[in-house]
Image (cartoon, rainbow, N blue to C red; front, side):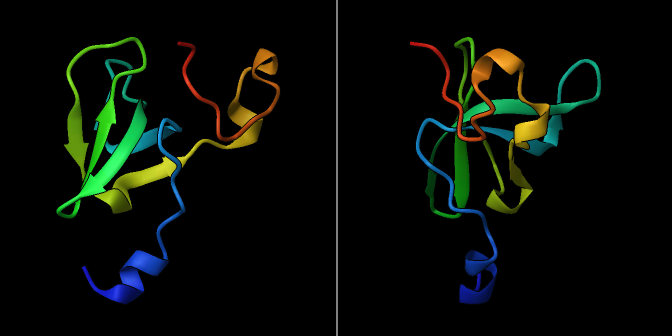
Length: 83
């Protein structure tokens, strides 16, 4: 990945819930996961409710739009899963 493509990626925060545009859920919507890190060019995500971690390309990740977050989440685009 070139330096230019890295600078266009959003600044993801560890434990932030993000959308993976490459992987879809059963309804065909982008799968949501908890961002862990980018290592060797791959982004590591964990399922929100627990389960097996998966990898994807960092350019396939999107931050959640505050308008799409549930009202109880306080409109925080950098929401984190409950511990």
